[in-house]
Length: 219
Image (tube, rainbow, N blue to C red; front, top):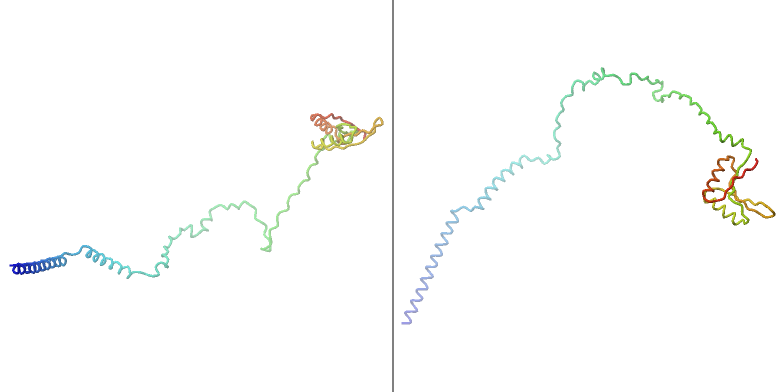
């Protein structure tokens, strides 16, 4: 009983193996037939594009000129100029000459020699400037003027006053004189030949709070 069962199992296994092999062969054959009959989309597309590109590339290679980039474009001939441009003498014949009224320059024998300019007209001497009346009057004044900015007992004080005038832009001098048996140091600016100029200096000192006096001396 057990021996019969073992044989039946072996027979069933062998039969299943054979049936599976047959079914696998049938499926493989069907797939092969489908692949051979149905066209591949990507393969056909690449083949059609490559054929067109090959034709275009062949035409380009046939007409290609390796020196085409170095060749210049043909120059288009210009239109012929009109009659006036071709004959400028005819155009300028009727035009007025702007330099016709001007005198012609002198012609020299040597073409390289420069033209000699005409002699310049003599320049009249400048008129004498009249002297101001106040200057003439100053020369006739018999006095010379000083502006005294103070008299001091000490030379140090006189030098300090002189320094103040110098800071104001007024030149002054210190002179020593004996008065009543004592030495006096005077600070004066001048001399001035013009009385008006001396009065201007005195006015500046008065404006700055200095006691100034106008002194005149016989020439």
